[in-house]
Image: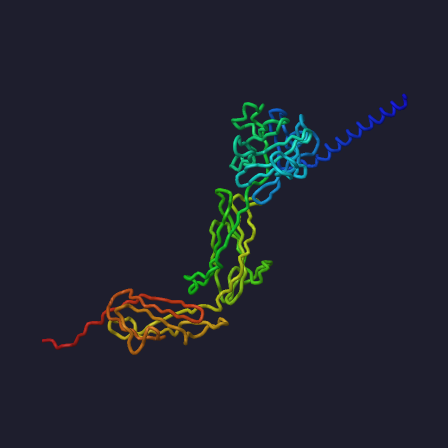
Length: 425
C-alpha cells in the first residue's frame, strides 16, 4: 500500500513538473522579438503599473519588443510588451483569435499613417484578457501616434486592458493622465516612419512646346505631385526618356535628369544631332517620372510612373526668312520681297529649299500686293501706301508636318521732295 502511495506521489509530481514545463515552454516560445524593434518606452496601467515595450527600456535580459512594419498607408504591429505583474502582452496576429466584438481572426494592431490612429487588439497571455486599442462611437477612446514636428513618433491616448490591466495610458505627459501617472517623463515612442510615400500622376502624353517648335524645338513633360501627408511638397524629381523602354542606360538622344525643385514640368530640347538629355527627330520614346517629398527620408521617394510612349516629329520644322529690296522702303514704291533664304527639311532631315511648300504673307492693311502677286506667292511684290515705322510684315511656311513664321516691323519713309534747278535772277 505504501508503495502504491509512493508511486502515486511520483506520478503526481511528474504531472506537475510536466505541466510546469509546458507552461514554461509556452511562456518562453513567445519571447521572440529582438532588441532592435522600433517601439520602446513605457505605458502605465491603472492596475499593473509600468508596461515595457522593449527590453532596452525594461524587462531584464530577455529579448523582446513591439515592432511596426510598413504596409503602404498603414503600419502593422507585432511582437511583445512586458508587465512584471501580468507577463507578456502579445501583438502577434496568429495569437489574436476570438477577441471581443469581432469575428476570428481579430484585427491586428494597426496604425493609420494618414491620421496616426492606432486600432486593433493585443492579448495578455497569462489571463487571456484583451487590450483594445480603439473604440469609436459612445465612450470612444483610442491610441494614436503623433505626426507633429517635435513630437513625431510619440504615442498618445488610452487603451482598455480589461479586468487585468484596466486603463492603459501611452503618454504620461498628457494632461488628462497626469493624475494617475507616477512620472510625466515616460511614454511609448517609435522610430517607425509615419511618412507616406508621395505619388505622381501624368495625364496626356508630353506635348511639343508650340512656341518653341520653330526657334527652339522642345517637348514639355508635366506631372502632378500628390501626397496624403498634409503640407508635404515636392522636393525633387527624376525624369527618364528612353528609346527602348528598358531605362537601363542613357546615351545621346535619351534623357535622365534629376533636379531638386518643386517645379512639376520640364522642357527637353530637340536637336538634329541630339546629345545626352536631348531628343532626336523621328524617334519613338518611352518616358517615366518619380518624385520625392520634402521629408528627405527613404519613404520620401515615390514609385516610378511609367507613362507610356510617344514619337517625335519626322524632321525639323520650316525656318522662314525673308528680305526685300530696294532699301529703304519708300511710300508708294514697289518693293520686292524674297523668301529664297528660308530652309525646309526632308523626312531624312536634309536641309533644302522650301519650293513647293505653302506660303502665307501678312502685310499692313494699308499695303497691297502688286505685279500679280498674292499672299501665297513665295516672293511677292508689295506697295506701302502709308509712311511710318513698325509696319508689320510676316511670313509663314507650312510643310507636311507643321508651320513656322517670322515677322519684322519695317519703316516706310516719304519720298524725297522733288526739285529743279533754276537760274538766279
